[in-house]
Image (cartoon, rainbow, N blue to C red; front, top):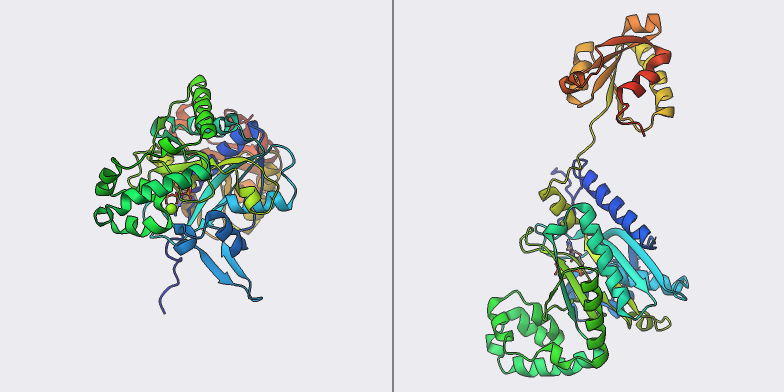
Length: 432
Ligand code: ATP
Ligand code: MG
């Protein structure tokens, strides 16, 4: 029988990568906390209707990327393809919308896409949503907090901010008609995807990657010429705030988003370091969505970061987070020694929980245990043999040359009750 393997596009994240994930999560949690955002934890599964009504029936996600299924009751459910819809659903249902509300969440999302580097079927996002403020100072906040996250991750030099406004839905309708008229007349010159989108979602043609289509768009009507005055004013004000904060950006008049609920500000953080999957974070304003999902009219702005892509960037920049090696490795030969060691090390852990102490488990000669100790990367071995058990002592043996040169004492045998003090002295650099 062949072995069962992970589902295509759904990856295991292994211990040599998880430190980067943890670093990312901790950094984001810290920065968002400092801006007054609270974490919300949402279900992975929602009613299919939620996504149809929010993301839009004719978007790529709803048309062909959702994992939808009937449960045993015959209800149509969907593994969430993104987080905003569920967050808005929860904010309405839990009455969170009376005052400006700042929320964030992190976790897996599911889309049936063609897997490639930086594109999975199960991927992870960190989402940020700010409800209740219509003015562009809130857009500026969301953008500036993401910029702060890149700085703290050491990625500020690798990403640039692209910015646009897509106006009100009325302005977009007028523009849509003009764009479709222009492109209809040149239908034959469009790539296949764009021909299909001409009916369903013509604005998406603007961010087609096809060079011929892009060339064709050079002569097309510009969205900027159709914008309503309020959107133009808000965009000018946002740019003024970003300028004042020293935040650089590139206005990209063809930037649109793949989900229907956006209006006014849209933005993306992009990198050249990841090939085709260059967008690491995308966001914008979605003032109509809360009402559309049955809540009181509530303006909102948010963003979503792609965690896989950010981790790839962190790995590419080898930003000094590594799997943590052991500090001490416990070698104990024989049943009595194992028991002594277990009890002594448990007592040490009670007090010194910042140290990584790896206990040798299972059988093994002294020699083979010492080999494992060495391989673990630990700075020292804590050794219990027959002599130590008889004398109530433990032998502390430095394992790393550099540690020894740094002034670590030679191997020493100390009374068991001095073990904790010996470790505190040896790891003084580590103790807060
Ligand atoms: P793309 O154009 O790359 O398909 P998108 O517009 O579909 O992105 P959003 O729905 O805006 O993406 O999601 C926000 C972010 O989540 C993206 O910028 C990206 O970093 C990440 N992301 C989206 N889909 C995937 C995926 N299948 N695998 C990994 N990351 C993803
Ligand atoms: Mg996509």
